[in-house]
Length: 359
Image 1 (cartoon, rainbow, N blue to C red):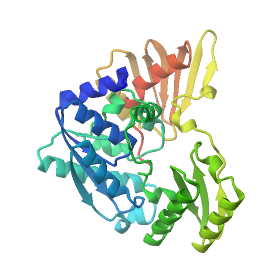
Image 2 (cartoon, helix red, strand yellow):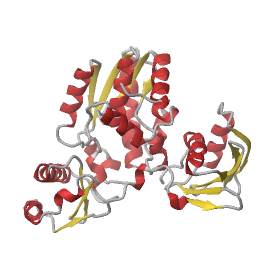
Image 3 (cartoon, rainbow, N blue to C red):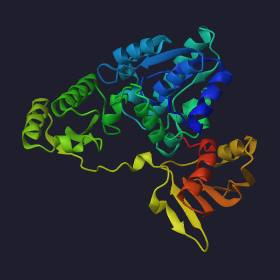
Image 4 (cartoon, rainbow, N blue to C red):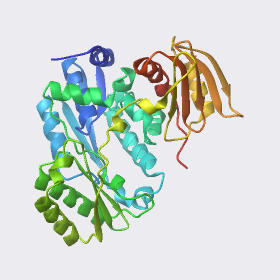
């Protein structure tokens, strides 16, 4: 097995836990944890939560992979389309979903004698607008991939290099519907069918179909973008989606992979001597709670912490670099030698930041 220090750190964390319940979707992150837990001789119980808004085949794939990995597996089923925040697609949707999901997983795990529950959140997840992460903290869920500073691309690289199969379609289909537009069973089924049709037509691994006011926008990964740029295939897809009663079909040709990058080149500015990182997270930060978490953290790399709540920022030193965290999601870290140096400091503070609730 090809490994790296971060992978070895995850394995050591799992060995220390020994007995764990794993929130298991069979996606990249949870598959890696299941694989490493098995490698580390842990007693692991994989728990899959089926909210019945996942792509077709999601549950069957999770069952098969758990069996192939040789781990115990339980399934919790609950239709979230009956829940107000999900059906009405409110800003609280993901928060409500994760609250119910983690709460149920925690209950089953504790009933089976598993006190430690882990999930597949990784360090890259902390720079995206994922309010459900608040429920991870509320329920005391551990995230070994965050503790090991593993980035999303590193996880995918490891799985590919070691030929470890995982599902590339584990995103809740409610996320495809524009915020505040009603999510219905018919919409979910139509999106699921159309995504599957496009996948089979062009041989794509990942297809996301965004729906807004009955307009379908097709999104593809970089590796699949060229596959759809064929007149005959486009016509087949267009006709099928028109039959599915979409008024208009669009193709998003933004092929960037910026969301995999912890730091963009544009976020680094030249200072008097070294580089200054100026990053803007896509959410507000709860300054008082973040200040408390930072102060209580056992982190030798962070010092001189001052929380100025009335103004809305925290002043501190990360790796002896002057740094600030602002209520509106801005982070600044000074005196970085290069991009990698800035990243090393950023990952030390990201797990300690607590985002504000999205309402």
